[in-house]
Length: 406
Image (tube, rainbow, N blue to C red; front, top):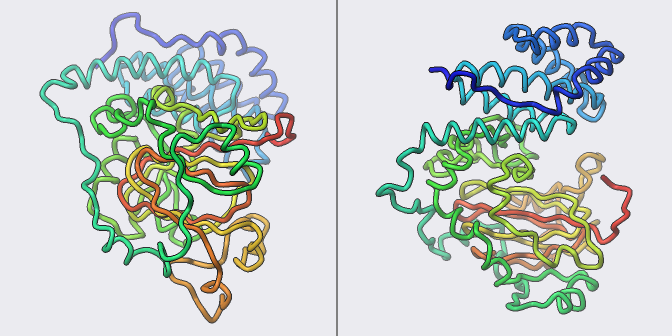
């Protein structure tokens, strides 16, 4: 099937910057790529595919931080050329996948063009695939309530037996600053996201499939990022939703969309959430906005983060355990620099002989309910387990507006 006659994807930024981009790529040794990209811009489909393969190889030529920014722009450029050819041939799903790959792996220069094209391809797909959306369909239910007594059996030893995280309703910004932000004290805020469109919309799987089902997203597969069987995959969001609902809860088959900047990629979902006012405390500046979507049983191992963090629980429930930064040495952090913010201790299976101090340490914990937010101060260690299918959003922010970190 082909699209309507004359249908094309517009790429104003690429059209204006193509000569200068190709010159920069050539100066980095990409003469063959520039030749193929020039032919791709003139309508050569095979050249577009070849250019994308060349850029992909450059992206994987070494550690990600060592890849020159111009090669990320080259990959985005090639994805745009491929998508334009696929769109004109009516291959809408392939075109959308190419554009998503450009967003996920490409540079920033052509991001506006990628988003512009995604809106057009996405609209065409929705018109084609969801013409009957909403007719007689019921709201998709994510989960049935669970038995707390049964859930506790799955949690780390001593869970919900020590001090609980304080919970507050109607917490003012002044109260947040005075009682939690400056003192570095965790708190659950129970009524700060009642106005979010996501509270209703994300409980409807039909809605999520409509706005994001065709999009390609990176997911983690396996128990957690410290496990030897852990891996990453690229799948469509609809495939991911199917995995969340499947009955396969074995640790090796768990699929987690974790710490991904989903809302930069899928603008429709970003419109469903609101950055909490608390994130602007003390002149705060948002550092990262991430999605944490997954089935019951997904675990984020015990670790700490450098920034202030609010974890907003939009759908489902999570168990969270917290240890203050003052206990860092007692929590057996990894010695390798890449994992120094993660503990060697597996809370789900504590080796008492290897980590004798662990069971004596005091902690805070809670079950974070749907519609609640948890404030986690910087450097506080935390372990997180999904108790149901779960959709969460984390907001990281720094109190120093002119921080040198990017």
